[in-house]
Image 1 (cartoon, rainbow, N blue to C red):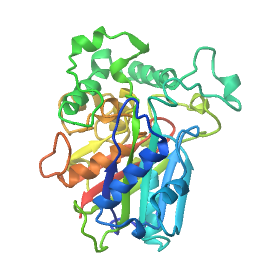
Image 2: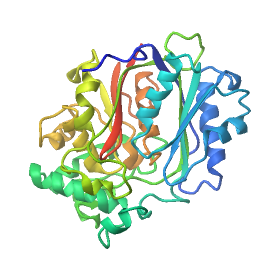
Image 3: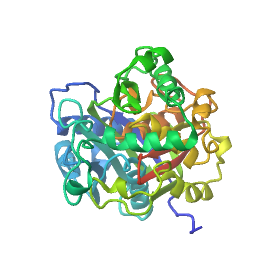
Image 4: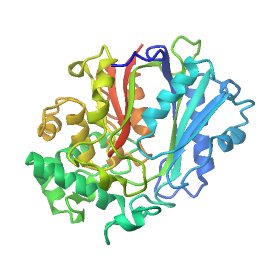
Length: 382
């Protein structure tokens, strides 16, 4: 185990902001990003002039760069900037990067945001992974992420004797949480019978297993944990953080075919470091916000991070052993590539969740990513 990073417990998320979420914003991605960042700065009790760092990420050029947002908002000076070419594995990782920048003295207040017109613009469910060797390694017909991740889900189900009723546990649970969330795109009731009656999108995924594409933006502000501020909510300390990439990631869009075990993802690789650096034990968590571009990624994360034994993740969700994805997750609130997953964790710990509120929540696990690489945080009230 490597030495515990110095920024842990010394940095915090101090503000959260959203733009409006919709299926057709009619606005530019830059305008959405500016709305969310402006809201997060105000929520932190800061002025635009206090911000000296911005970090963001985009997937296949579907967003806008950090400098463009800084210029739009009139940020007078930037001392730290990060534009990452990443997808859903980025949010927790970028929060940790921002925290390291603050701890190192490179910046005082760093905004991390994600913005996209993910429904009316470039839709992840319809984009064909292409480029490099993927043009040769992707079988004919395997041309979108629902199909790619479906391979992982089916392999997991075979190896763990998981059935469709078990996969359904994730959307059924999250739909109940989403019913109380005014931001959620999908709130209509879901029963097991109605779930099983849905047609397949990519076997074993039905419609309710797939993320809800959305137009919108979300941002958080990272500062020193002891910095003076008058924000709306209490600072939420970054207690533990880890990123991991298992073997052979990132070569091209078809790199998932190089993975040796589709029944486990990056969470199995980062679990030892994440918990080794944390004084908060798994059994002491009050809630978890687990990346859910598709329902199976929740099951893999639960087992990869040791919340439940192998093959018992569906029972863990079904029995409500821990509140998971209390905003309805990306399946219901909307696919902001997991930035809203981090935001929900912060709001829960501040007692400000827009829908379902976990009573006296003091600690929360957050994950970002579904496949070969990803990141995670353990957040806590200061």
